[in-house]
Image (cartoon, rainbow, N blue to C red; front, side):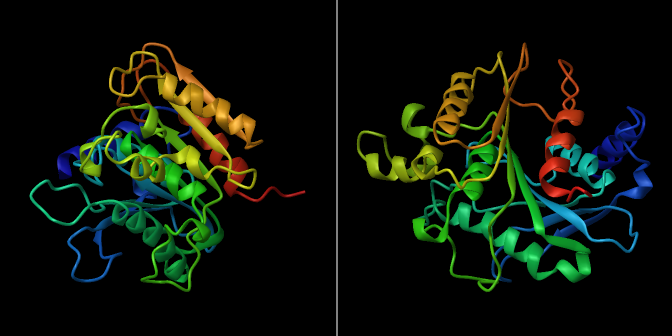
Length: 287
């Protein structure tokens, strides 16, 4: 694990002026952001201390809601890239589906993601975090959960009661990497413990378009044409629905890119696009 982390740190430093020296990114592993009885932890990626407040980004891993880890290659790439550019990043593990367990992972997985946003705000002083500018990014199932964090509100009944219930779990923008956002139009999901036919209301609750309105935050959607896990039509149709609600968005189709990629797939360097999006929405513009 350490060798993989060091590889990405050195790799990022050699690529372009976008990347800072590895020493400018501080990493804190296995942060307890959930109650002490929970096993899931988080990793912090912190920019160089300069006495200023920095915007934050929550990173949510993929894995079909059944697997994945906070420090996989994609999440390390995202965390180091963003922290090197002045973002406080928290990459989390969250409750996964376990067929042998009686506990359903939904909506606890979303509650965990929202709790992570609240944790960031509750620890803003230590993190030198600008609490008014927090975004979220995720890939695949993480893209779905990131989108859900962005569009669901307390009125939807999907905000956790605690911990850190005095903190907001709202975010200012969303980056969705090839997420299956409309599961009603996708396929049956093991994590929901039933089919779309048997549980239509549950699948509707699990689908991002259910909650869209004109007040939702801006979206950046990234998807490859060679994706055989989540067809690119998911993102294309999602962009159309966002447009119908008047929600600011940009859909970037990457020709030849497969299902899983980070910010530097061989097909296209996506760092300038992602950083420009986060900078626009999370770094206050001086007038």
